[in-house]
Length: 351
Image (cartoon, one colour):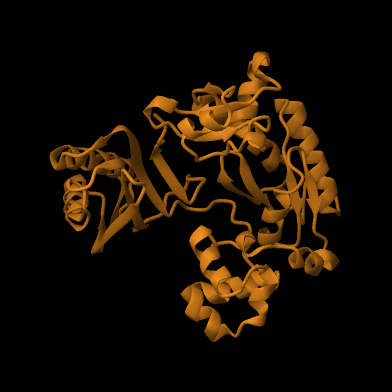
């Protein structure tokens, strides 16, 4: 979906149409941009940046508080359309999914025709636009879906895969964030195809175990199937605070509260987890994570709380001011059968 949260707000409030809109938190209390309308993007407003920065970039920006209940309702409409066409739907988030349409309810032999009909059905049902990428595998389809937005449709036919790959930067590769991209560029690897020219051992020295995966993607290989019922792999709760936390006692109380929320989620799902992780972001935006794994998985609240609080001793919390805290659990003993995302956020970090 295109600028999903912002587009829903513009749809429902005609006074917002054609204007720069950001959905998210209060710029005076460290709010974060959850979504930006296409009118806001030329100013540099993007999701995940601080709302205070967004307002500086675009003084005319209109800020709308998020209404996730409304967004989920629209998402359910969209996913219902997907599942009428194919049962092979793998959700990535409320507004994005992979579909395997090799076999489809319309008996369309071409994926591009399925995409066109899906886009039209979504527009008719929701008055919103979606962008689609059609390709032989998930990696290529994901990249293609981001081209020509909004309301885009990009097809990478099998015979066009090589020419498509030739123009991609290393940042396009799955698993390559800013840090890894910078490391690759330090070694003269600017484009995706540059990876192919490097011996595997040399690439491993640069990016470690990620090397074989990047080599596959650099050749356009991605054999992952569309998984319609992906089980959650983690669940977590985090919060960004309006003012830095400097008291270790207060920080411990916050960690304990989040750990109990996570434990309650495990209990509701009747599952257990082996690994507890805490996340600490200091006032200078430096972020650290600390994890501890037990031999046996558990959902016991006190055990999870004790482990989470103990992990604080491996950070500088209480010495350095803290702006964000989080607690998550991983390595489930039994996967939930109704989760639609690999990572479940129990608390959304918008103030």
